[in-house]
Amino acid sequence: MTTSRAKNKIRSVLNEDTKKIAEEGKELLTRKLKHLKITLNEGVVNELVNYFKLKTSLDLFYRVGIGAIENQQLKDYAAQKSNTLINFFKNKIKRSHSSNPDEINRQELTSNYDLLVFGKEQDRLDYKLASCCNPIPGDDVFGFVTINEGIKVHKKDCPNAITLQSNYAYRIMPAKWIDSTQQEFKATLKITGMDSLGLTNELTKVISNNMHVNIQSISLSGEAGIFNGQVSVIVQNNNILKKLIDNIKKIDGVDKVTRVYTN
Image 1 (tube, rainbow, N blue to C red):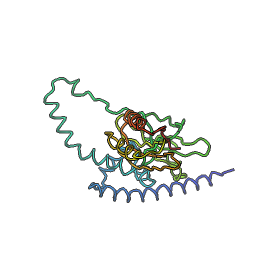
Image 2 (tube, rainbow, N blue to C red):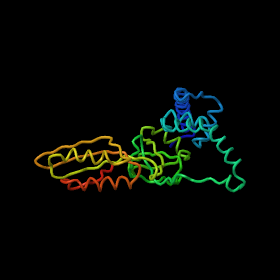
Image 3 (cartoon, rainbow, N blue to C red):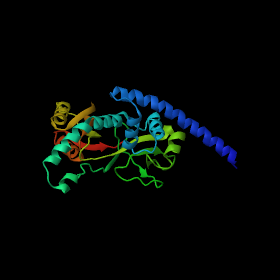
Image 4 (cartoon, helix red, strand yellow):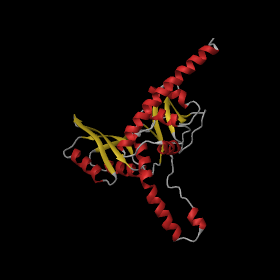
């Protein structure tokens, strides 16, 4: 049985670890922001806390310290910060040309957060939503690799977030919701068929000629008359990917094109 004294000791150790990570995170954040030509001060800290929907500066520094806040997120903040003045004048101009208050105050949602991706490569993995915080599309979230239930997705302000990140930092996976119709994602295709003269060149040509498709990696081989290939591409949405697959299937000699999903 754990005594009250023991619990207090454990809690004290956890708090000290959290503070240590937060201190390291603050130093790391200072360096990263300096690279983005932003000086870390009280005003910037408050902006970042609000930007990432956190409660305190300790939460901010801690998340930077464990890597839960990625460089791209800080770049997005910096871009937003630099555009604040421009947007102010744009809005001022719009207001001067509009006499309709409803038109002035109307805001349009341009993103439909319908797809959850993990890690720097934005992989699409199987997951379950944590019942303790019930995240919904668009929430700031992270993935936690459980022992028996795969990846559980928690909100970054989940009551259990700090405990999980403090005790099991090595099992934390960066995650975010994206708009599948507007943001790029990685897809890997496996291609098989009859190995014939010029097939490799034709395949490369078809992929390269597809607009909005970037080849990330390609591996092709032929043995005993059988052609095997694996191509990883970056595409903007599923419609473009489907069109690419259809075009590859039309190549003479290609027998089958299947998508490989990351486990």
